[in-house]
Amino acid sequence: MRTTGKQCGLAATGVYQPSLRSPWLAAEDTFLKVRYLEELEQIQKYIREKGWSESSTSFADYLSLLNGAFQELDEPMMPESDDIITELMIFLNHDDVKAYITQDYSHARILVRHSIESSEKLQAVIEDLQQFIDHNLDAGLEARITGDSVLTLSATNAMIRGQLQSIALLLVIIGVLFTELKVGLLAALPNFFPVIVMFGFMGYMEIPLNIGTTMEHSIYGEALPVVSTSIALIAGFLVFTQASFEPIVQFGAVIATALVADFVITPLAVSSLRLVTIWDVLSLRLRKNVLEKSALFKNLKPWQIRQFILSGRMVEYAKGDFVFRRSEVSTELFVLLTGKVDVCLPDQEGSCNLLEQFYPGDVFGDVALFANIPRKTDAVAVEHSTVLVLTREGIERTMRHRPLISARIFANLTADLSRRMIKLISKQQLKSRSGNPKKGGKS
Image (tube, rainbow, N blue to C red; front, side, top):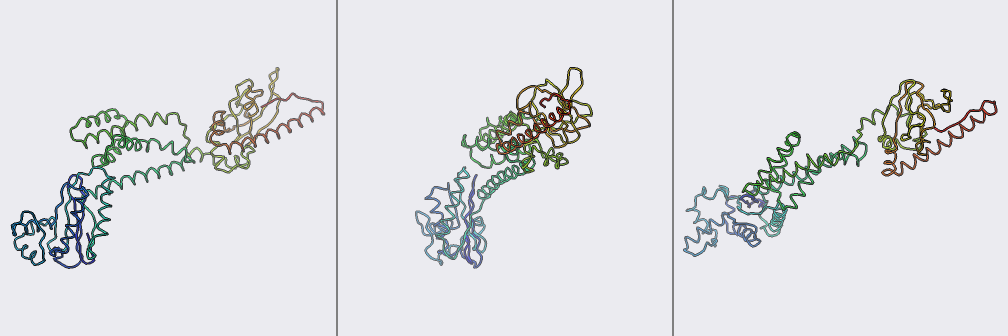
């Protein structure tokens, strides 16, 4: 405890120890005065009444014991005056009490031994005790609580905050890399799912967060990369559960559970995910102008376009290659990125009657796809071409998860298809007038 110009302190020791100390800022011999020794006694009395300790010891206890012995009392008793304390100090060697008082007697502490295992309960005890000290301590003193238990508690809290901050930062970074938070959340699952399982297991089994279980944080980080020895690690840590020392049992159980979650559960959970990184999007930046000017993506923002095309794939075709052929099952929609593609209607003589020519940004193959019928035409690359292929499954997934984007896409498809049909009808009418009619078809 500290005071203005004078200080007194409390400390605790034990397996899990809260520690309080109060260094004096000014006058010497502060704790050779009854007034301030009574402050130590008052704090010790409060701790005992609350049941927060197995035992507590201070410089005041030594003086009470010495005073009781000199006055031949049945119990230790605090000296009644400062003069008596001065006389008693003749018989007291500072080396015997140096753990509780500084050599100039301006800084005292109370050593409190306790058996509190729960970090939550220990935090509540320290806060309650600090509040009591702040409200009841002599105005000339100030105090703070320290010691091994307080340091361990601070380290535990820092570890938990660090875990939460690292997970949050991880979600943000992966969310940016994958262009959306939802996909980033799935990609980050192997990193934070073991943490959730670990703390969930500890809560269910009522395992306290203490020194033994805090050690898991360091060991877990080292063991994670050793995928090839996961079974051996799990089995090895399970051996600790057979120990007779409870913290070791808890330590082994917690790490084994985290390893099971990391090596078995999370790979199964993400095995069916198709994750597309931002590098795939960056490769499409070269076609940015093509995509944004495409009729399919009219009135869509760049990030909406990127989200929609992430479910697709890019395919290159050499000159003369078929993009699709007549009678094939229609499961894909195509957006031409580079090159040129002709859609034609094959006849019995083996020739192909040209229906439409498509250029970068144009959409084709949509009629048969949405009509759910086999292809009625052939699509041939007239020159080396790159095509964005969007599958029925990917489009349906976009419909489920991004209905607003899907609504705009289908509105654009409807407008584009109407325009093409009008163009095709007008073309057929012109050919009929010229006496050279051709049969039309669907792409």
